[in-house]
Amino acid sequence: MEDRMKAVLWTEYGAPELLKIGEVKKPVPDDDELLIRVHAATVTPGDCEIRRFEMHVLFWLPLRIYFGLFKPKRPILGMEVAGEVEEVGKNVKRFKKGDQIISDTGLKFGAYAEYICLNTKYTMALKPVNISYEEAACIPTAGLNALHYIRLADLKPGQKILIKGAAGCFGTYAVQLAKLRGAEVTGVDSAEKLEILSELGADHTIDYTREDFAKKEEKYDVIFDVVGNSSIGQGMKSLRSGGRYILATPWVIRVLQGIWSSITSKKKFIFSLAKYRTEDLVHLKELVESGKLRPIIDKTYPMEQMIEAHKYVEGGSKIGNVAISVNGHNLFQ
Image 1 (spheres, rainbow, N blue to C red):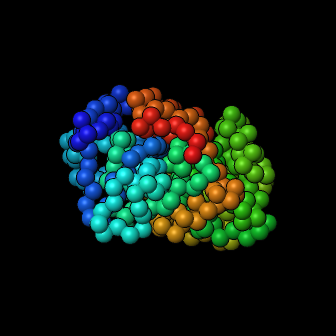
Image 2 (cartoon, rainbow, N blue to C red):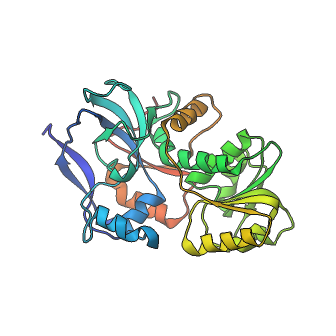
Image 3 (tube, rainbow, N blue to C red):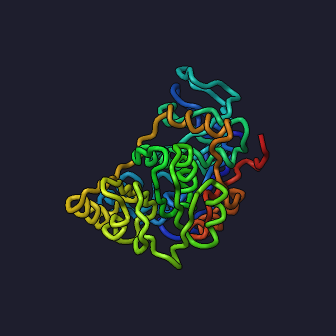
């Protein structure tokens, strides 16, 4: 039926096995919305956290009320989308039918479906012309976050930055963006992920399972900690005087450690959630089209294998991003 669409339904909080393929009503765009035929989405750690609802204590209650106290009332996950505009609301001026676009979906989520309606207030841009829909879908969340944190690093040519968790979705972009600023980059991750870091331009790599960077004599101008799973105070000892420690996962205990360490030293601790801006997404699009930045995809799954995709992301072995092919689309265009 034309007014129905296939989607991955999220009707209970918990394990990946609770995700189910089903049919729902195809959305109809409001005057300020686009109807997008979804070609690709992604599975991010954020999708998995929301699915399980393992949230930061400060955000748990308001988000639980928003998503549903007892069961999800917004039953489709997916925070990044790449697709083609099928209908345009009468008030929309920026896009037209047939445009290929990328967008975040905010707290609306909804990318795990054949169609999605999005208000143009979301961070949208035309899809880079030289990559696939699957690659393009990986840009809006991870790319914008990496750009935000690398800007906070305020890198100067020749400065040294260590990126902890460098082979993940944020980290693979951060390595490339730091190199574009002329920095000397050290990437930290597990052994099987170090090769891609060198390919992306990292000058040095550290296998965290064999070496603790905080115990080495090397000092850095910036440490970008994507994962936040070890002592911030110990890590900040590897900064030069006046150096910056940037934390992307602001759990309370880590933030307190960082604030205390900055008070008792001449080093700066920075934590800040990214602000999504259209001009930044356009900037990333242009970097991709110029060949200066590339999304890294570990695996691509069809929408029907969403359970396996979520399991893979939660397993912790992914490199870069995991993409989802929707509407049977897996073509380079």
